[in-house]
Structures are given as C-alpha cells and as structure tokens.
Length: 85
Image (cartoon, rainbow, N blue to C red; front, side, top):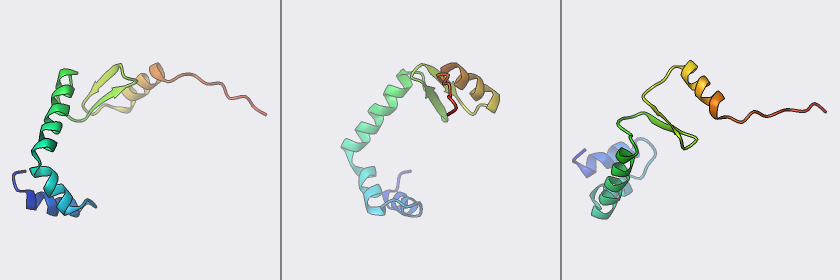
C-alpha cells in the first residue's frame, strides 16, 4: 500500500485511527522496526501466513485441518485431573 491517505481510510473503516495509521506508514523508524520484526520471523522459518508457533517449539505453516490441530494440542497440552467434590 503506497498511499498513506488511502491506508488511513481503510484503517478507519476497521476501527483504527486514520491519522495514526497514515502517520505510522510514513514514519521511517516505525517502518524499520516492522522490517526488523519481519526479518526475525523469516530467520525463525516463517515463510507465509497463516503461520503458528505452538508452545514455542512447534511450527505450523498454513491452514491446517482440525485433526492436525487436535493431535498437536494433545501433544503439548498438560493433562489435568478434575476431582469431583
């Protein structure tokens, strides 16, 4: 998106401040910060969206079916015992 004014319009249509969005888009410090964050994620192996990191260890690229998520969550979720009163 190369037009900060248009970005501001789009941002305001989704509940964000138009002026703030336009200002952030033209702030070189903010742009550098975003580039740095993006490069750090590429170095971690993120190659597209969506991309999830679960429990800080498991990388899940792209959309996954419910069975894949269930299997992963079973692997990482601690088992808890619910005692009846």
